[in-house]
Image 1 (cartoon, protein in one colour):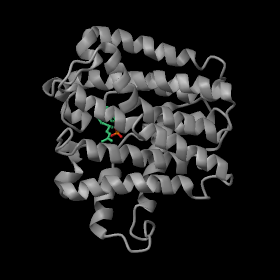
Image 2 (cartoon, rainbow, N blue to C red):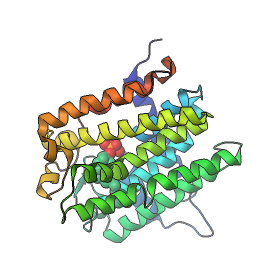
Image 3 (cartoon, rainbow, N blue to C red):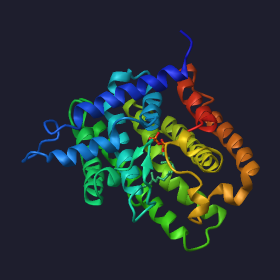
Length: 301
Ligand code: GRG
């Protein structure tokens, strides 16, 4: 059967939705004590029912480039998506972007309260690493440890959380084009990079293959962010399921503000081509990764 991106996108979303639904319950999250129902409900609100699940998709496609079956990629994809969902819950808080709407629904602090949203984010983050450590993920503990380290690096101070800090600092100080690119590579790019590398690690990639896929992931992350910045200006809140036009309103420095809309579109096309060229030695098994970066540039939400 010829490769169909929309089928893979929908099937990844269904797999991740099912995995989140099974994990985020008072029973499955039990520790020395029983999880409070309100906390679990806030976690479910922040993670279920929506989301394109693009990071698990990339992880699955990178692993697929080495022939890893989908079923072996779901747990690691789940962990990455939990980190992504935590970041959105915290990003929406009044102390950060102060948003009322996410994925077409009230944000977690709106549906519950700020304390519940902070704790829901904290707990999604914490259990993500529990998911990676579980021996059902991979029989080899060395693989699981590499995945833990990879995700921690992508989500931490030199990755997503550090990028968020740079973004906040940028609201009150001038950022050069280079500084904007560095901030975005951390805030958005680092988790995308981690997802791709985690798939490659599951696939037993050689050092050279890991480097090639890292180059792919970095270009794909730049394409994703450029498209996001363009959509913030061109798309409607209905299509996005969240407020738009916020970057300019908040005085955020993006590459669209620096390059202009047309300049950003041109840069986006160049970046997609860069990502595609990193995959030239991979055969048809990397078609999913090729389709994803094209999708990043053409998506409407
Ligand atoms: C709070 C530690 C911390 C980090 C926040 C994710 C993030 C860092 C900020 C979100 C701000 C933002 C809109 C960044 C642009 C890129 C992005 C993460 C877009 C949303 O991702 P999608 O389109 O969302 O994959 P869905 O809803 O499909 O999961």
